[in-house]
Each structure stands twice: as C-alpha cells, then as structure tokens.
Image 1 (cartoon, rainbow, N blue to C red):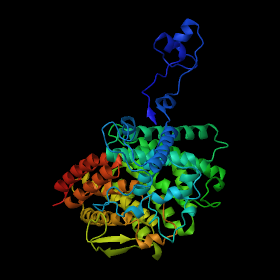
Image 2: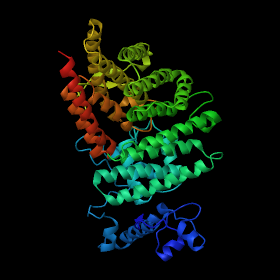
Image 3: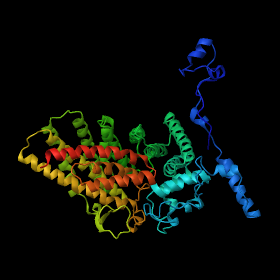
Length: 536
C-alpha cells in the first residue's frame, strides 16, 4: 500500500474553482450560490492509499524465479527502497523467515517452531497473504495469540476457529493484519507499517459500516469479531489525547450482542439456543472495564443485557455468569461514589455487601476452577515472586483476574469512604486493617498469575479443550493498573507492574500499556497520601 497524501474531501466543482467547500448536505454552499450541481464529497480513506500488494507480489515472485535460474543478482535502488522504510530500517522477515524477534531475553519465549511459519502452507487457506500482510499476521500470531505450539501433534489447525477465520474470511484477515502491523510498527518504529495498518483498519471500518447499513442480512458473528478487532487496534494505538477511543468500539460490540440476543443464538456460531457464549461473557467484563475507566454509570440496556448474559450461560461457566452480575452492581456503585451520590455510611454498607458477594463467589467455586501455586524453576517468563499460578485453562485464569480487580476496587471504596468519616469507630478501624490485608493479598495474586498468561506452551494448556484464541494480554492491562495503584501495596509491586507494562508497550507494541503508567503513578500518589493520613 502506497500512501498518496491526504486528498481534499471537497466536491468536484469546488476543487476545479479552488474555493473552500463547506461539506454541507445535500449540497455545499458554493454550489448552491453559483447554481451548480454539487457532485458530492469524496471518500478520503479510499483515496489516501494505492494498493500495490499485487504488483509487489508479482515482482517478488519474478525475482525468485530469476534467482533460481540465473543465481543471485544485485538489487536496484528502487527495489531496496521498497523493502525498507523511510528511516532506512532493514526489511522485516517474510512469511517463511519469521520467528519471534525477542526470544533472546525470554519475554515471548519459543523459537522458530513457535512462529507463524507453518500457516502459509495450510491446505484450508483460500488465499495467500502478500509479504506485507504476512508480517502483520505473523506478529499478531506470535504476540497476541495463546494457541500452543503450532507443531503440537495434539492440535488440528483446521478445527481452530482463529486459524480458519483468518485464512477463509477476507474481512477478518484484514482486521487481524491491521492489528499485527500496528503493533509491529510501534516495536520497530517503522512508519510504513503503520500506513499499511491504517489502510487495513479503514477496510475493516468499511466492512463494518456496510454490515450495519444492511443489518437485516449481515453476518453478525463476523461483524462482532471485526468490531472487537477495531477496539484492539485502538488499544494498540492508544494515545494520551484519545485514551478511551477503544471504548467506542466496545459499545458498538455490546449493541451488536443485544441485537444478537433479540435474534437468537443462530447468529453466533459458537452459541447454543438460550446459552450465552464465552465471547459474550468476556465482552461483559470488557464493557465493565470501559465504564469503570470512564467513570460512567452502566446504561439500563447494558445492565439488562449483562444480567441476561449472567443468567443464561452454560453450567460449566456459571461462576463467570455470577461474577458478571456482582461486578455490574459494583460499577454503578463506583459511579455513585464518584458523583458523591452516597452518604459515606451508606456507601460503606453497599461496598461491604459487594465484598461479601465476592468473597462468597471465591468460596463457592467448583474444585475444577481452583488454581495451583507452583514453585518457579527460574525458566518461567515474567515472574513476580518465586511462585506462579496454573489454572484449568486460560479462560478461568482471565475470570479470576476479573474477580481480583473487582475485589481491590471494592476494598479501595471501603477505605476511601472510611477516611471521609474522620474519627472512626473500632469496627471501622478493624475494617480498614482487613481491607488493606485483602488488597495486599489480591494484588500479589494478580502479579503471580501473570506468568501463566505468558506460558502459552505449558503442557496444561496444550491439553485444554477451550484455549482462548487471544492471550488475554489486553485483558491483563486493567487488573495490572488497578493492582499497581491500589492502597497499601508494596512499592516493589508497584514498580514491577510499571516495568511489565513498559515491556508490553515497547516489545509487544500495545500503547495502551504505556498510557496507563501515568494513571497508575497518579493513583499511587493518592493512595500513598491516604496511608500517611489514616494508617498509624
């Protein structure tokens, strides 16, 4: 994709006369004033880029044939500039050369056998990616996917939803490659990759817009996945100027799921009639994070939808459904606190009720939901202490961390409301001590769980039936942010979380991780002041 500059959106008569077009619908003011027919306004996204993938691919294939027939030859300057960015970076490996770029320091782990190399020979692929597209797909699969060893004989790639979606659905392919190219652009500081990523992102936006215009005939399953990848793209490109842009797409995904609910589960291929899918449940938690971060109250329709999801899940996922119901109450309680709608005594009682529900949730978990604390051998990635957690699968590991960030927020609410009362009773002082103890334990558990999310090749997960397609790296950001800024956590824990977020931002390209760091430091300053004033 070649960037062609930013064109004018103006209508044709205004461009010809070189006058300022005001873009008013249905016709601009200059055309109305001069009596001309306004031709309408141009689609800027479609004009900003020229697709030369096919041309480049033909040239690369021709070069390969020439090398085989005549031996190596010296590249021309034009060819070199095609394979390097404007800053002179060497070209990024092609599809059969790619391996994890950071395996030397162990951050991602694995070697070439854990890369995306094998996918391009997959017999079920309906089309072949270009060199540029393959870079994005490979980076996405290496950094954002939790599928275990691609060469694992226990796995059948043809039955994996993410693999089949990428290589049989062009819209999903474009959405995934846009995310991968954006992340790789941040890691390599390669602006050309971001240009290509934004082109792919625009293609995905067009697909979603088209589906919404014809919603009666739209494939809601594919549309929902595309919208979620649009949200992930915004997380990858998060900036301080637009830190919540991803939330717009999350709201859109929630609206789609409400529509799916009214149409029935036939519109969601991994659902059964009357049963909420794991994707729906996970989206509930993502919506909660979005509203907690924005300080907004859950709209009534979102609250109704989350209650429906919480009550209609598969029996094996019932704990996740119960947790959805508890956290939906908590988000509105936090909003009321921010809006000063509660007397501190009432807020404390409401928070203690949520705390009791969360404590009961953990106590009533089935045995298969429990996790093991395993002594570290020193080879694990991203260890906080000398132990790490092993869960039944990565799905339950995610649900545990949703429980943890919610419980930290509840106890944060209890502590801040007690501080407003001035002189506290003995019961409230004891509650302060208890809440600080709970926060410390839960924050450490979040940190000790992190290694499990990076153990993508652990035998436990290789045998799991329901391994989620994404590592959950995006879903780890909010628990880490909450733990890092929580009242009473050790300074070493706070600094470890900052360091991990810097790794995720700089080495995995997720800019939202870097954007959260100032917020965590701000929360740390606030909670440090609380401890100075209240804890003797």
